[in-house]
Length: 114
Length: 113
Image (cartoon, rainbow over all chains, first blue to last red; front, side):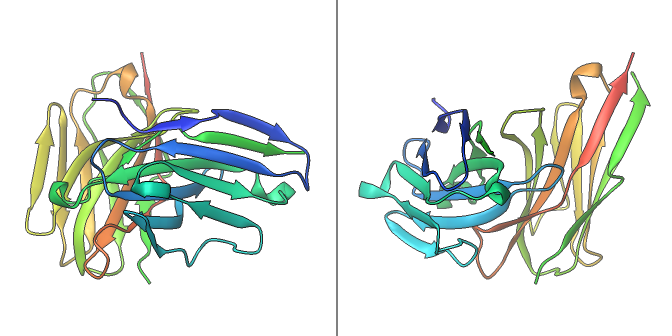
């Protein structure tokens, strides 16, 4: 069974530029998560989807961040414009209620904003 | 608000030692607790999930225990190997939102030859 797929793995951009991350969850997993992980810290939830609906986006900086999950499968996280403080690893995870919401993570996208 | 703390922040042990990693949480109303492993530059790998009704879970050389009343979990690694070197993260799901995890900052483990 394929795991959570993310792309790109690395991205370097200049501040004020836009950037987008893509995630394909494990087949059948209806819950999808986007996390941000700063160096030396645990991941922090940005947004959580149940199928197509964003049910928890309280930690998403909505002035510059946006996300979508079309058809309840793939998801895209966008930052526009990027700031220096956005440099971090962006992780996508998925889970299934019948599996006790055990979360499976993708490899992440390491973003560097210069 | 749930807070998760992991002690120690870093640990170095010689190969073959048994070791214990600690995780504490402030709100005992949890749905489950997960232990993850993270290798440098990689995503998180789920190691063990303990339901709130369980006391422990085992997988190979790993054993995780849960004491909800005291807000603590431990991850026991038997006969450590250099390949166990990684950061170990504890995460707690609350009863209000079972799918939402709150993470600790992790314990960075190095197993030396």
